[in-house]
Length: 274
Length: 256
Ligand SMILES: Nc1ncnc2c1ncn2[C@@H]1O[C@H](COP(=O)(O)OP(=O)(O)O)[C@@H](O)[C@H]1O
Ligand SMILES: [Mg+2]
Image 1 (cartoon, each protein chain N blue to C red):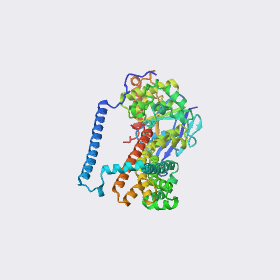
Image 2 (cartoon, each protein chain N blue to C red):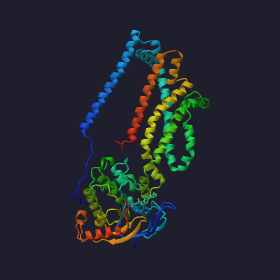
Image 3 (spheres, rainbow over the protein chains, first blue to last red):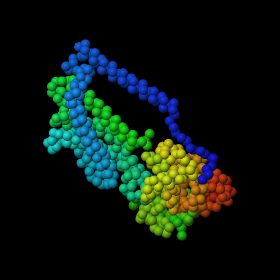
Image 4 (tube, helix red, strand yellow):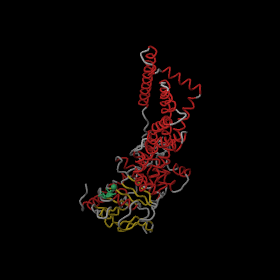
């Protein structure tokens, strides 16, 4: 087909490289300063501890915490604790967050079922993890299973309700379009509802990283024989702030690691959303 | 026999609500370009949705190739709205092939068929981009390609080019007219724009508002063969047709 020369609207929208470069410089500056602040704080703490200005029995010191980590790494305890908690979080997260998202999306099929179950889902969502944890220990024992259940429980409602809300908000015009091509509800679900809800699903996944780790630690506090929560509990019952703080450091690293994994998943699921 | 035959269609959205459409009848012959023109709020989009099979009429029926399609299955009608309805999570290529895929074509074949028409619509090189990287005109082109590639019997368009700036609108309408003439398509075009109605159509139905009612049926015959809208605008009969439509709309108060 020949086109007229009346108007040419073939505009490519590439980000200007100048803006891109400025953004990168800004990020580098930010990260450098953040690292500097962290190091300064740790150094002040360490110096305070070595000069006696900081009471190391109550507040420990970076080198003491580091020493605990090295010792526990050598004894194999570190790997056991981190591995146990990571496994609980990962499995519970998959069951609770991914399963919850799937159920939330599937509820799109029946507004009736969704409305019917809404108060029950809200009721489940209102139970604090801390309150349900002892029960799961009774039902599932003190091992891995009970922690996985607690983690799944901590994630499921947020994922379910968020993804259902996303599914409900799918553009009716897009659904009509699928119908006009002869697609049925299943096609509409697959081609419109699921991809359109991904922004919401991912948002809930990100929130749930925190909830999942809290769930695992709480479960381990109640009863466990391994895990970071177990390690922290052990430290505090021995009045060893060194061990407690080492545990906290591990929790931070674990949150960071799981957040990075979810960010990677986000980049794959939402690669169209730049 | 007309390709599309709408008989005495009426619509109320609620039982005791106002009559949005009253006794609307119109037809479109094979390869005919029919425009429904009327003021905003006169029920054009309502009528559009009824013809597309997305909304049941309160009364009346829609026949496609002689078969009643009202309230049964979705008729094989392609449609293009002012909103381009491109899926933001699909590449332009997959968007264009979407209809084919939903109709059951294998993804590879749908992509191949979709790819084959990019050059003709001046979108070559944009196959693997996401819609967000396209300008408004390009998006509207892609939406039309997605419809045309499935080869529907009838194409419905609801104010498809309303949001585009004037030169671009003229450009895309020229392309549209050329395509539907080359490929022999029946088009029902809905608009509030009288100029658009005169330059594009073989026949125009004029609607008035509250209730939406057909007040005039005006066959258009411009003494020009070109598909360039800017040229068609200069045909000697243009002003008379424009005037005729304007007057028939004027019979009823124009809704704000
Ligand atoms: N879903 C709906 N429910 C109730 N009233 C509606 C609905 N859609 C449109 N209407 C009413 O029908 C009338 C015609 O609307 P519409 O078909 O959108 O007109 P147009 O496309 O010509 O501007 C308007 O008064 C509008 O308020
Ligand atoms: Mg409208």
